[in-house]
Image (cartoon, rainbow, N blue to C red; front, side, top):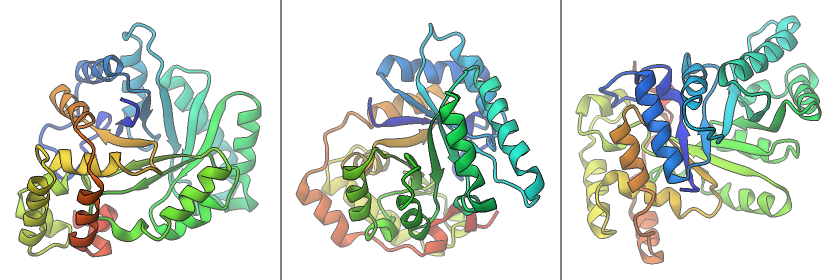
Length: 302
């Protein structure tokens, strides 16, 4: 299951607009990770900001027979106090290692790209020191916009990038050739999140769509169902996963699960036949165009 990355946001809090089950228990986390292990999943994604997530992952992995997937975590959004920046970063890294019960963090990402330039590149310098000491593997960043992505691609020290991406997100189209070019020149791992737009794309709840600034979701939902039929998919989840799986610039699809049954469904959606070239072209030509404030969950109504 090389492309699936276990999203850890759900392990620490209620996450996603369509979440109906709440935060999973530790036993549910164990079962989810056990399914991932048995299927050959090799990455877990988490963050300091996902309250309780790192602790749940570290505790659950203790009982999984020595399974050691790669783990990407993120520094918390850094505050305004420049004097405390060094202490915040060091404290965050130490706490991540403690909670995850590891001596080395495989990948550490900035949660916000805007923090990269703070204090004349302090974060990058500290990450290089951590890498040299063997406490951090790869330094990376989570980006929100194509503009941030373009800037991050120009920084050679960045070896891991995470960005939001889904079947309706046209914003990245112009930057994808640059991602491919950079990947030919240096090692760069690209993971994408929000494949289901935090569950919105599979929701039939009109209120969910209203909160995401879509007053009339009928045409979008009709298009998704139409593509399920045209592409011989099992459901909308399968369609959205398939779209991510055929992108040659993506290394991993970060998808969360609140229950073992959701995890099992995610795994099944990674084994269906790939989309054909004709189906891909049909999606690109016909897909609905959502407003940018719909594509960015940070701008949704609470």
